[in-house]
Image 1 (cartoon, rainbow over the protein chains, first blue to last red):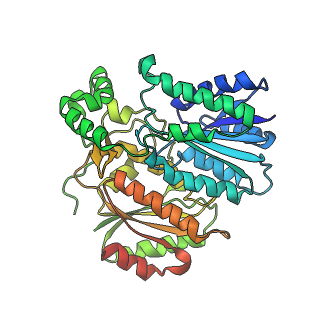
Image 2: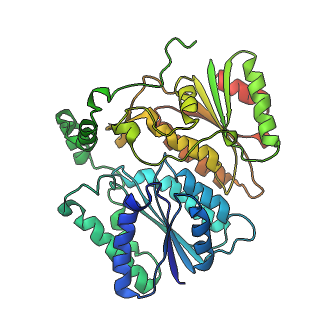
Image 3: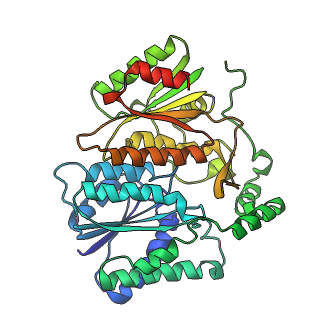
Length: 224
Length: 183
């Protein structure tokens, strides 16, 4: 088995990580007919399945959403497993980190950890693809996601042909690294209209939770 | 002061790390109220990413486990200590699993802070924090720098500040007590 993908999103098949993986594979299969197995870390006994796949593949890509500034707990659990003695490891390991924040800067700190992890495992590091602004892609109109999905298809196609992530597409996906002054100004103008939180407000209203949106249920008054 | 300690030690048996944290808690209790959680002995589930705590029951996680008592102790604390032996070069998955659940303490709305987008506060006050680790055989300065930087980023999102990062191998309990209480 040449390539395998491990999806570390707690949302499993409903995850944005799966959508991005699907587009990556769509491109990949245009250049390579080898089947690429995908396993999920969420769910019972899933870690064992993913570990088994990890031990059989020549190259593994691990994709996950950014959770509190690094990897989700279940991905960290997996990292602990693959660090144990006696584990057979793929020759090459790469990562895709996606986040809801629009800027890539949020994910570059965990990237340093991922590079060090692979170095510690004495394997070849393929790099980390970083993409922000992914939350909401499931409800966005096709026009808003076309460029993103095209990039991931291209990323997969390039990977099939070269066995690595395209540096050019990685660079494009990292944009914006931080928000431009113009975009920040637009945000500050639009925040008064409620448009900047449209996604959250839509769900709050749909769930009848709008009035409670500023609740502080865990606050204990009078603690000394 | 109210101090909450989250111990992410995953050892099956009594470890030097947890013994250190116990000594620290005992010393802090001489003058302060301390909540110490040994996360490995609690039922803490993974954050499922359902966002119910943001858009269905705002601020309240619907997962039925022990995380709620930890979240209450964290958000009502004056100071939080994240404690964990290093595993695969980072804090333990137990501590990370609990930290993922902190999402319920924030508001989904985004605001601009220091030119970056971050989540807004849900609560009026968020506790500053310290990090206590124990090293692995191959831990180096780069590992500690990576963790320090990730916790600094966490601090920005958590509306709080990392006050110290210490390793038990070269930090006396008294030193940690001093920096926790007199920063």
